[in-house]
Amino acid sequence: MGETVKTPPRVYFSFRSPYSWLSFHDLRRDHPDVVRRLEWRPFWEPDGRFTALLTEAGHEFPYTPMSRAKHFYLLRDVRRLTRRRGLANAWPVDDHLYWEPAHLAWFAAADQGLAEDYSDRVYAARWLSGDDICRPEVVQTILDDLGIATTIDELLRCPDIEKRALDALVSVCEEGIFGVPMFLHGREKFWGLDRLPDFLAALPDSTEIEPSSVPDLAVPKATAEIGHAGGCG
Image 1: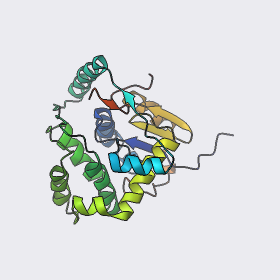
Image 2 (image 1 turned 135 degrees about the vertical axis):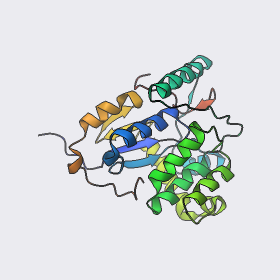
Image 3 (image 1 turned 90 degrees about the horizontal axis):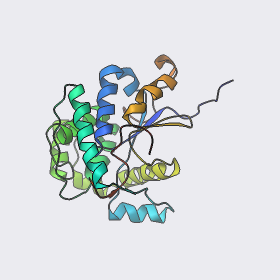
């Protein structure tokens, strides 16, 4: 008999990653039913505050340096992949890396059943318009457009959001997530956009997948792996 899968199929994603964006794009285009049945878990490089909280929890966020050569490969690879999909991507300039606003706001969107729409807007802002989603006002505009009645300042001060965000970072560490997108089915991991077909093939028929308990969806620096389409080193 096969292994009993107790946890739902899940995806670790980051708004920073072009490959997370493209996997989200492909899933929405080709498998919209699966999008709504997966458990989505945000992944981002924490700021000083969340790094300290993560340290207090006994964990260290996984960092991997990206070489200059790998960075330039990523630029060319993403351009190929977007053209293949008929997309014209932009390259945002990240002057000040601050990923908390975009990723913490995802929890507020999920609470209102708008995580998929929110994710679509954030990815579009970053990868189609070239907007700097590290700027709180950019994320605030998306929240306002979706009718989510909260502010970035409120989200950043909210104890419940802080706890859920910290739990998400702890989950990254405990599940050994070293890069995104990372797809998981039971104990099986599928890293990268190129592994999406294998992940989908490993899933049971979509009618057999229980809906996620999470509402709706629940550059060359020292960084986690956000720049690899496949699933090897």
